[in-house]
Length: 145
Image 1 (cartoon, rainbow, N blue to C red):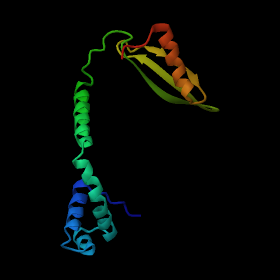
Image 2 (tube, rainbow, N blue to C red; image 1 turned 90 degrees about the vertical axis):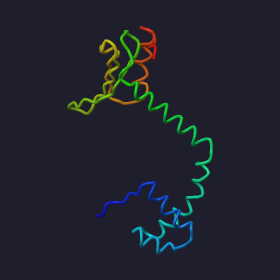
Image 3 (cartoon, rainbow, N blue to C red; image 1 turned 120 degrees about the vertical axis):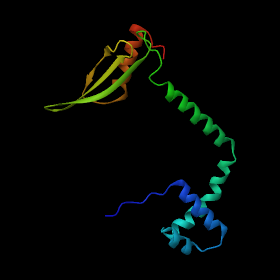
Image 4 (cartoon, one colour; image 1 turned 180 degrees about the vertical axis):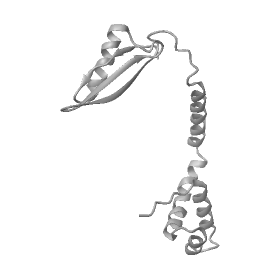
């Protein structure tokens, strides 16, 4: 079985622009670029739809969002979570037992690394995760983040 080929966005744009120019047929472009001619016509049809996004405000907003995400990623791991009950984190895992599987939800405090809650269940549903969080919020107050 052959592996499915993936093409970069830049390659698709190049082929689509070449097809939109009209200098060559789809078959000639396909032979030159080593793709199927239906792929060339599909990319040619999709190109005008994508051009509206280039000139819209959504593209600028997406660039701003990407910059904000990069800034937050740069801060990741450098934020001072030193106080208890400032940030909680959790994880769900499973434990194999003789008659099936048990699920464990571990909710921990970031600063102290102490386990705050760790219930076990044989079913994995939303209440299994939300119930310990609600109980912790009632007993110790919600975390600040």
